[in-house]
Length: 334
Image (tube, rainbow, N blue to C red; front, side):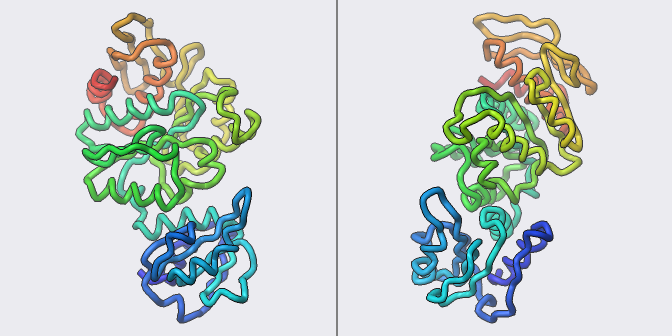
């Protein structure tokens, strides 16, 4: 696609208040080869998005990006006179980057069931359970996790819980090309605040819990939760929003969820456990929900994993997976 076509695709996805003015500049009618935010990655035909950081404004590196081959710059600041390339002023560069990346890679999230998981604890285990359930249902499932990333049969170490938007969209594109029909994304609150997953169409979202851990970024619990709420503000109205009703903040998500699904151990909810059997060999209990009762036998141990199992079971059931597939997936997962 050309740079102009890329920009027009971005405009279709952005809210009206966030749409920049695209000049009728023939310099935009050239092939786009990449979407970048690091000027050192510039190559001929790339589009450079200048992000504001804590220490520097990426716009300062626009001359370097253009010298390296970038053919257009998007920035929140006014154009720099010494940059010989089209300069598009955007209200929010991070939002623009997310949608540009999605457009450049062909919106891979629209070709998979993407499940986003946020919360302080339990993301990794819940994600692993979800992936196992999808695989038991015969759906190849990619994973972007805290520790690892899986694309088909390939596994690689994760560099961060959620990378920047171009890496996220690029990995999803690889998953689609590898035949994945689903993808699990563990999403840190920082990534939501920095719009790294904007441009993804989520099939479901999960909120596990919120604790005082990991406040090095947001500094207080309320700021962390405000960031996590963004996942549910992004969900399409027909995508289930699955959340832990035993967490004090879980109930507040009902007001923004188009399709709320609740799970709990200590309260009435859509999904609840039957009598719990704890042992060194794992957990045994029933999961009760409107779709029926799932009989759980898992090698996972401990009460926190009851919540993780409930979250994965609820999400899978509301996405239309059968109870037998859920039971088989939970039994296979470690």
